[in-house]
Length: 273
Ligand SMILES: [Zn+2]
Image (cartoon, rainbow, N blue to C red; front, side, top):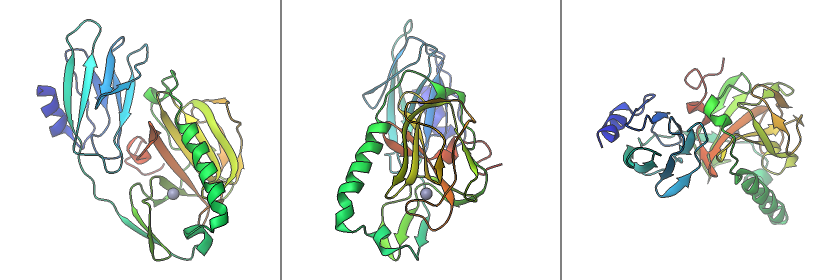
């Protein structure tokens, strides 16, 4: 419990907590955060009762969604130490409001005949993000997939052509069409589709343990489904496909299908180089 209090004081700054079992937690304990645990090879771990995959080196990951409640329970059963329970305080965030006008009406309220297509594409995205792969590429950190001006942030409430819509759950980097997009971390391509209704040219990369990055509105894809890519490798080109008002890369980060804030894991406090 002493550790739990330290985590509380550390939030929302970068935290590194050590426990009897040599556990380290890397991340900001806030809504939208990906947290990477290390140092517990052979341990079993669970967040709020949900079992977490632990790599042979002792790394694991968990995350908190946009509206995650203020506390979470991390249970750890180390191989040769008593079980530990850590109460994590999850800091609440304030989200911006983003108004976008001038979208084609069909992009704000899709025509009924496209609903079947949208459902099918959503199911493909959900299936891609459901993989739970043993590799732990997420533990090596993330790099910016492209540089450019940040034109949209995680969590913002969206008003599209004056109508309230679902919040924006990615990070938008404005860059010219054709700008190369690099893999933010090594992984396996779980989806590579050139033309989805909302997301246009779309790629899902699997970094292990259900941690995924998502790259959309691409003008061109340079990878295929199932392909392994290294960190920094070009996977596609920036574009303006799907529901957009101009060329940009929308970068998403997911854990266990929950959208997280990629800006919190990228170097430079959310500003690209
Ligand atoms: Zn976006």
